[in-house]
Length: 118
Image (cartoon, rainbow, N blue to C red):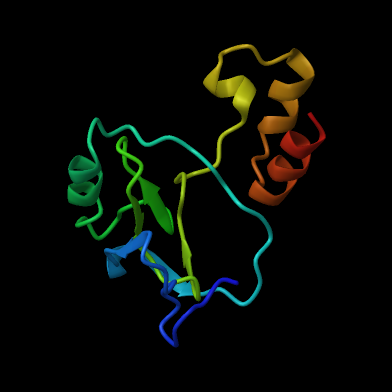
């Protein structure tokens, strides 16, 4: 069973708390899913260094190359995992004309729906 303390920190010897309050973006009342992604940093320390910025994007957990798991934000707080949402076809430069037309009036909620259907 997963134990969580009053501050939203997991109590588990395999998870090292390294909370960065700069990542926390307000109360998270419900969880809608789990996001798994890779950071751009070459080391865990470079990722932690990037979390010092007031405009930092980050995750609740970071898994280092050696398997060490760090909790970097309270489970009761939102984090901005990936920054501004972009369509996959834009990132991969392969949008169909209909997709480009739909993207002209960018709406994050609608974009999320479009990406979920792919």
